[in-house]
Image (tube, rainbow, N blue to C red):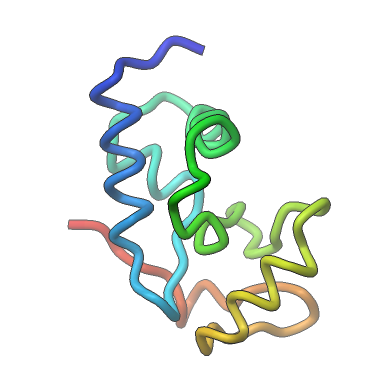
Length: 98
């Protein structure tokens, strides 16, 4: 995965800017940074997001990552994010960049 340090930092800045009670998708962040695929955001999040509100980033379906689902949904629910059947309601909780 080829990304510049500037792109990595931009992803980190956008994730850090998602306010409590709101979420963004990997695709939202990729589009805002100008990355060719949301998978690059996922790679960055896996390797460099320990200090970020990672739980506010979801797939386009609104479902959390399978291995983190319980923890991620619990954190989001505590922030007041609307969740139904294990899925975030992106229509009401989605954060818009810029």
